[in-house]
Image 1 (cartoon, rainbow, N blue to C red):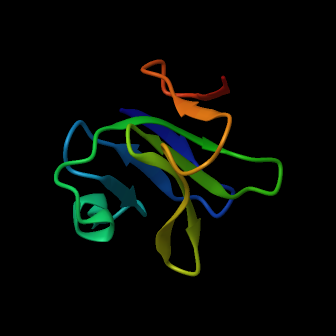
Image 2 (cartoon, helix red, strand yellow):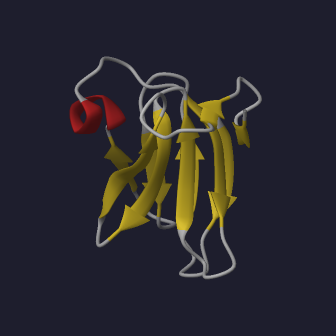
Length: 94
């Protein structure tokens, strides 16, 4: 779980089992990672923005990035040599 704000002013909230919600000051829009990945509920461990202002979402299933209005899986646990998800919410080299 976590909260971050992107440079465009959106507030992003990671949930325990419901994906990520974006708040624009008036309403929430939910991005359901379960539907995106097709693996059941996805716990969000950490949300952060990089130096370019892009949103990144860390889950137990992988690392996602917000691109063109959708959350896209960038690194799937077990599919990238030398990378593994940690319960701390960060990806660390093995």
